[in-house]
Image (tube, rainbow, N blue to C red; front, side):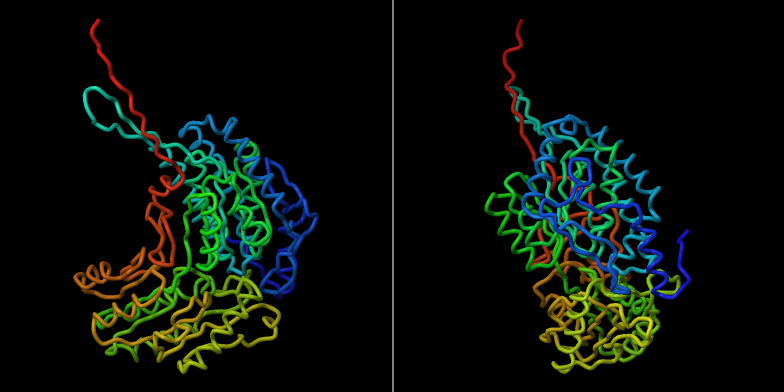
Length: 505
């Protein structure tokens, strides 16, 4: 049961911060223990609902990354490197059980750090554990293959871990996105150095601490700090055998360039500008609910958010009216209160970025039909809150329609023919996801084939599930996560060829 708060926003967050941080250290976690940064410097992680500091976090540098990579290497060369898939599965399950016992604590940390409504944070912690459980289970099915070459040779393959995995995750879904990497990387037998975003470092630290006495020391390491000071050294480290990054596409470019110097294989899950196509036969009530849930959940801070709605001209006006009602029905407020459905943006930088795009949309001639401002009320004046915002009469060349806003900002475009809808939908440098609302199964399957996106949802949206590969086309990334195939991105294939000689006695 979610433990909600009932005071003023200041009282709630003061109490919650004390509860979450008392007798807790959020230092780096290296080789099975909490350690300060070698720089002896720290920075504060900020509660976005009240803009108060939560706790101090190490500001790590290259020397700290070196220590973490060395610890991971020692684990691979030691006990962890000798584990079987079955043993790793058992240890992962033991860790998951420990995490589930601390689910309330982890949800509160996630809510405070990012501004998520507490109920949503609870759901996301459970989702992260589901992904870890999935990889604990499918890891037992890892197997090589026998290649039928001839009667004179026995050829087979082995799947072997890379060794040390560097994992860099963003701030919008800190634990869920970490689980997408930790699950397959650990299940495959790698050791991990995890660099969480500086805006959301708390749950990564805590889950690593809770791995103590489950995994051997050095199997899971966490290094905090800013991207250029800790993330870049991890991405370019000669001791990292595989790199997995989730974040903005321009940062992904830098990660890929850096990894290229040592020819380190990379998995990249990057940005998106995902379209949702509403055809004239669609159930409009369901379509409105689906799109509103997709763009306003997590205050729009989702890489796969359906931030471009393309609506057929026959139902455009009706859709807009209903969608504005849905946007304005959201309850913006304290994330620790049960009634809240939308919290603040995660940081001041994100607040300034999103409000800047609202101004850009107005300047470019889009029609603002909902939101666009800070919500009313003195209680929210200190937090980074913004209203659900809807632009109509949007042209696909406008910046607000082409660039990733990463906030609760929806744009609405109109089309008249199927081919026009597909052309507009694909006219983007991204290709992470897309959605379709229609009752026509032929049209649904045709659109799913024609849309250039790694995931296409029909009459639903954003329901990423364990076992379903997730990743993007074009600038949205390289590789896939969430599915069984993700294990292959954390292993190397070795072919063994054994000559079979004369068997006569």
